[in-house]
Length: 620
Image 1 (cartoon, rainbow, N blue to C red):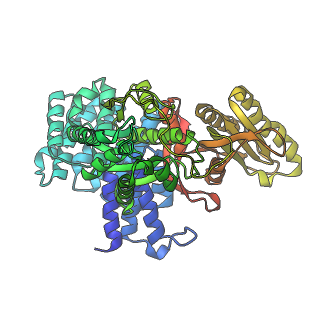
Image 2 (cartoon, rainbow, N blue to C red):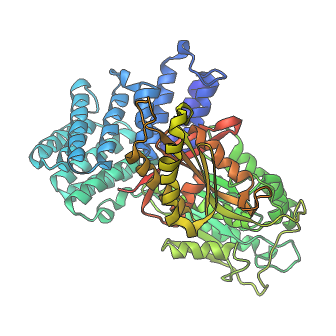
């Protein structure tokens, strides 16, 4: 087997494990390595079966992240997968795209798209002789959703006939057979058979979380349509929780602390006992000495996908949060880092909330923790499961940036929290040494940084400039007044805008509102036939909050300002792109008015590297 085929197999496993974010990153790396030139253009002569399979898995992973528009663009425009008419899985993915578009629509448009999706699955059913139960049951569900229950029942019985005639020869085939039969029974209203079939699906032992997530989403649609209790009916195939772990740093041997060294063996055993008695889909956390590393080691031993997210650069984190506890913890930290980073297509990885210098700035711990928690919750949402915190904790708050704050945040959200308790009489205090680099710089503060740029501005004629400033820029400035109390600073130059918001919700809402107003404005320059549009990008990160030394007005500066500036040029006109940090914070604060659709790792401007981006939209 060639190296590419081996990588493709591992990529498919990563995606089937439900690690959608990571699968998209891996797929883009493989594309660049094997099929794209230095400028990112496709070598036409290299289009082959592996290219088809790679782009298919990539598009499916993006769709599983609920990024319907992005997946549709990849399917029809970027990779032209719709041309593979003789490939059943690719044809089925096209039908699923229409279905997902229908589920986001409302009113008559929803009904029309549901019918289109049913027709697409009907075509697949008629064109292919295998797996007809799967396509038939999709027709049944879609037909039921738009109200034709008689036709839905006919297709459900057809699906059941196929399932009864099939003799599964593997765990995968058994799962699909049982899941299809369960869906058909649910459409027919036979709850007893639905539950029986779902138990059969569970006993098949299929470990592909992505497949189970797709089944759950489909069956939840039917339950909602029929007013049924989905949690009770679907309990057998529920996907295990996403674990987020946290806890105190362990003290050096012989020193007192909130997690004394002599308690290590007991805590280690209780962590292992917890993992042995709870199913976990994957785990997120940091790698500080003590609780974090004990969780990480236990997860790696059990082959649980581990996602390490460090709050800042690894070298400084090692010194601030590991080395003080002793050399053995340094070695254990390095082992976990190496294990998670060992191979491109492993399902464990290491990432960073920021790679900035620490500078003795505790806010980076809070920022990193919130970032990691938000990403864990985003992942849980994509798998239709929940995120759960397990913390090694003595029950007392410290500086406001530690374990106590993390536990408080989860409880505020009403999410499950399990505590591995520690008994300690030591007062909470900072447990890291002085900064690696001493600095008199002001402390950083997390802010939402927005950059915008007008598409079509360069084509304006001289006579358009006054109207552009009064109507187009005036519209933006006028609407910004309603957010005045939430703005730290703002500026513009030419056709560019720069705004820093205190709050991520204000930034998100303003971005969507102003895009809607600009679309309605339809500012068409003299002699042009298309209106001006706006690209908007938002990043959430810790910035220095100070005064512009030149114009002597409030300003924010630092590397995280640059983050937003670098994604604005790659944002489509009329769209608001946000970074993963922004999406994670919106998820963490449970903002329901907006939704972040995963776009994927996109190459940012001026060689700033790939960034995981999301498209912002109003929630349905």
